[in-house]
Length: 553
Image 1 (spheres, rainbow, N blue to C red):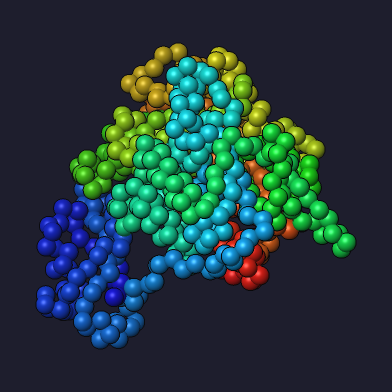
Image 2: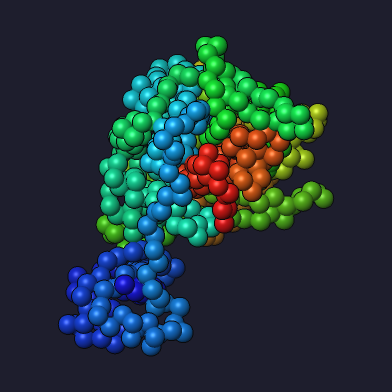
């Protein structure tokens, strides 16, 4: 087959228009088009009211060889790439010590799945509960203000991505098409088939719950084992005669020890006590940049009109999203800060995402339908390890955690010390005055918000940067800085505050057999990239267990 890309048609084109456009573009007759499938469908919304669809198509035609020769210099007519997944190893008949996977979020899920499909029968450990029990515990915070420290938005089967928009797009480099493997497995588990071709696929929380259960069942059917409520409290590490460290297993909170020479750290970005344990055990890690800010909410209709104009509401377009960046000019000798939108959730809700008592954290979530009244996104400011010093000047790689905890504790106080979150209307935030009452936009955050001033919720430089950015964003999306839009704080878990560094074999720099992976280790950001990293690490483990070298493109 051949891949035809960048084929553009009007938003409301008829069913026959696509085939006609293929014939015209390739210069072939109708009888010479045996069939086609949509590989990708996106849209160009730069001209409101004249939105076009952009297709990539896989074409079946008896004239394939001739056409590829004729269009040899055309980058939009190429052979269809092989996107099928090919296993790199098969488990031996006898495995002395099964591989251990710590964490069952998107990364750990795919580490476990790929290892199971290759016959390695992994043991997967998660500190939280299975997804339906975890959902009940999460709702207990949202509805009754009861936080479960081991079972919440951050911890449990499916990871933090379960309570999100379920976005499945990423800008990672993926030469081996591992992302396609992820999407294919999700479809097998119950995701809609459209995620295989739409340009910005998403699933939504309710569907993710069932999918995660189905994938767990697949792993178990292949000999894998998943243990919930099993927090790892320590590593077993040996040092050989040459001074090289080797992992030999783990110790659970119960005191039980599990032996393994291959341990995958598929931690989420909120496994703070595990980061502390790793640091105490001498595993090499370092502080890394991340971002802090607020959640902002607008009526979804405002975003739809600004992005799509008269074509807002079209079923193909759905609820509009956005991606915004502002590079600040700086103030009074201080350098400018970059402010950007993050984890935009069309037609969604702002959710309580705390994992530690006495702290408030926000995140965003959408269902597959994206039909809630408000749009929400994080508006965040990039910070560097040098910004951690006012909170922890020890030089520790864990200093970013200290900063996060301080901001989250203060947000808990500002919210009223009952897991309500502090909030402020955008108009009042820009004017520097406290908010006293809501306007047209009602906040979606549960268990509730406390209006006031957010000026002390973040460091002064972050507040100044966001104040500068919001009017700039309004010039890109009319209504973005509307008075009644709501800011809710704080957003501190944009990415991991540490990186557990690894080498080309994907093992820890100073502890052999330990494989840092996914978002918590600092190698991913989001469901798809974490899952892809999980595949890569599973392959590295499999190759090591069969005595082969790792290919790491």
